[in-house]
Length: 247
Image 1 (tube, rainbow, N blue to C red):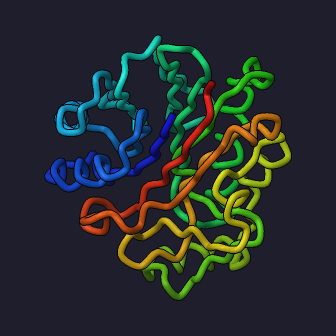
Image 2 (tube, rainbow, N blue to C red; image 1 turned 60 degrees about the vertical axis):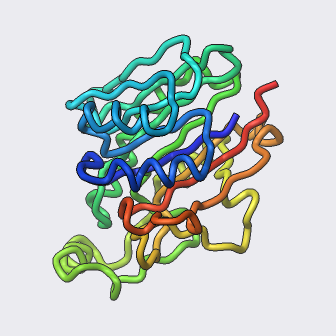
């Protein structure tokens, strides 16, 4: 199964053709979208990419498209989260996919919020810990050891970092690692940055694919899509594609 995670920015309005070109270049089986708040846009994007199933809701950031019909899907919004996460069960039931979009802005204050949101997601999916599943999406945070270049932030966001403590304690991704998940891209590319944002001049990695450590051998490929025609104009994020062995 080929999985694509893609933040399409502001609902993808006015960019269906560009987004479709990027998605088609990746040939995914399932696409998890973030900032997909316009169901009409997702419907058009699904049609333009040959997806048989899709779901989006104006009240939720996360949506999906699938080349084959799915067994089911549902949004779950924990009380401590600003956004719901999306659960997708493909038709064969070989795995579950959980798509999420954590709170934005880089600061100690927002990082603490992301920690609360992620802990709530992990609690919500705890029953699936022993089975094959994937967590993917825009985590809006940096992994341990990665660096935020403050000089590249817009002035207002740079000021927010200073006001909440110049040195940000990046904890969110460490929580995933401590919960026995593998950062798919970093596991396969230990020395390549894999930056995903902003698309035109990427300097941070915000978009991730995680699998439980026990199922890490099933992750065969994980790449940042930075070479597809029109990818810079399609959105402000670069998508991430992963190949999974679901046999």
